[in-house]
Amino acid sequence: MNQETNILADIKKPTNYGALGTLVTVFFFWGFIAAGNSVFIPFCKHYFDLDQFQSQLIDFAFYTAYYVGALLLFIFGTVGGKDLVGKWGYKKSIVYGLLFSALGAAAMIMAVNGNSFSGMLVGLFIVALGFSLQQTAAQPFAITLGDPATGTARVTLGGAVNSFGTSIGPLVVALALFGTTAAITDDQIAALSLSKVIVLYIGVGALFISAAAMFNFSKKVPSGVILEKTESGNKALIMLLIMTVLLGAMFVPVFGTYKNPLVNATEAEQKALEIYRLRWLLGALAVVVVGLLVSNLSARKKPDGWGAMRYPQLVLGMLGIFTYVGVEVAVGSNLGELLKQKEFGSLSASQATPYIMMYWGSLMIGRWTGAVSAFNFSKAKKQLLQLIVPLVAFGILILIIYLSNYDVSALFYYIICVVVMIAAFFLSKDRPVQTLLIFSLLGIAGMVVGLLSTGIVAIYAFLSAGLCCSIMWPSIFSLSIAGLGKYESQGSAFLIMMILGGGIIPPIQGKLADIIGIHQSYIIAAVCFAYLALFAFLVKGILRKQGIDYDAEISGGGH
Image (cartoon, rainbow, N blue to C red; front, side):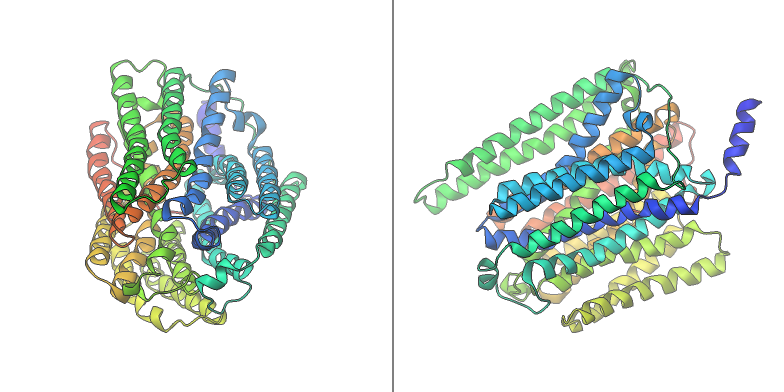
């Protein structure tokens, strides 16, 4: 009876809007920095004279940090018997995460002063380590700040703010790097000074510290302390540690070849070297896939010590998050190099900025549309808003790009892709399986069209990946933790860990681009969308066998 009373009390809990308003600020930082990297990557490629794989190490450093951070939290929780974020409380965890990110900003400043690309990678890694802690705490924190039934709406609000960050991040970073919104050539980029990057990260670091102070001293933000003991997952921990060691081993030979480059190599020798590097990178991918599948098979035979790994929907969902983040980042990060090609307009890194803004803005369009379902509107009003909101969001993006003195004429007809997305929303009916399947199939179609064409048609097709990815995170997340019961918290941490995909898939595409060309390398994106469609197909049957019908209505935010 007491348990029932407590549940009812939670259900009736009013939303803490003051705390929620403070919380959503961190969602902005994640999107701002991540999307800004899409401009930073082509800039660094020309400034430091890197190949496409080396430029993708920015994403490798950034997203690998999410994996390392989540793994460390899991280690401490397993050894200590208590979830570290729960022990600190959501409030302090976010404060610590923001301060850690501020430390990363300081490291970036020192690296820029030393004109060190490797130092910048370290700085971004530290920034993202802080993000990992913030993200682990922020998403469940948002759910606890009111009625559990409206928890998704609060996460969605965070996703909308996150998407705003992804939309303006490329613009702000472009201004910081190039000093102007006017187009400049790649030769001019190579001659630029990095001094403005220092100003950018001084500002970013100050924002991190200010947000940490706001959280720490706000009386409206509850502590969010959870003192429940965590379920043992010693076997899962051992497997994750083995995977981590093997992942490191796969990258060591690749990095080693850059320390001792071939001198006066023939074209055949250089190609053989690139293939050698690609094989090791594919080995890293195999480590993740095989490691997770073997873990689940072992856990289903003897579940003790495996924790949440015993659930096939979670393991397949971990691969789903890995793939989703990977394709989302890979498409955007390689876009600048794609647009340099003659058949795509021979655009400089500076000229590519509006297209990169539209790609990340596509995520905003989709997430704002998805947010409509989070509110208690009538069916008719919901349908009307799902028609109007994406068109308004598209108009806002066009206006921002125009006011930034970029030519927007080539982007007007992208509204055709937005209309297709609107139709997909109506077909999906807010059902997670149906939503994921439809948008995955659209992603496959977009990538195939992009691969088989050139010019503006192909550009639109590749940009549409942002629209397809926009609504996937909540679908994958909710389907993956369905039916986990007491393992839900642990499963959520495992899913956050798989943001690692953003650190592995883009370098694989980058190296493939060095071998077969940047245009053809987008076959990687098509394969990723194909797996997401497969996951949607498989998970419905898996959950049904467990007596779970998860075709209920959801709405989504973003990571």
